[in-house]
Length: 194
Ligand SMILES: [Fe+2]
Ligand SMILES: [Fe+2]
Image (cartoon, rainbow, N blue to C red):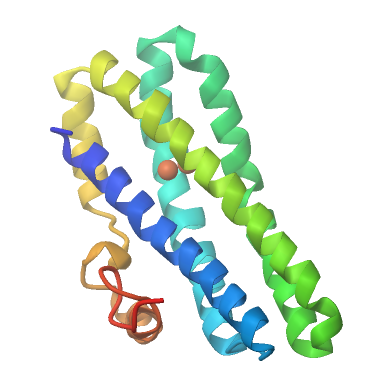
């Protein structure tokens, strides 16, 4: 991956995958122990998904990268339409999951299973989405885009990074990120491994 934009997308996918896997592992652990999870920790993680992957990562893809690929290779239209639809639904999907978490927190045990199921579905959907991007879209972009396209994309992607990929967060996000980093296992975070 020779272009900064591609490298950044890939790093952001890795960080998000680690976060999503941690959520599922956390839930499994508590189910096994018969305990309730740390709801504040889960809220912080889902809030992060809403603020970074949904609002920033997806927007960079849908607004900057995909239009350039569409311009250069009309054959990509179908897969890009599907991914754009996923992006458009992403914010309401994570809000629904946040609501299911709130129900689990407020109502307890009777809502555990519904939240676990919703979390599993959300994570499966996301893994599939990222895998289509990695396997189909990024290689296509690498072949089709011009040096001028890459210069513009690299500049835009470098200006806007996910702190979970090891970049200093903006001031307003510092507390949230140090909290999440302490919850997540290495190598992304500083917490104990699962
Ligand atoms: Fe995406
Ligand atoms: Fe992506």
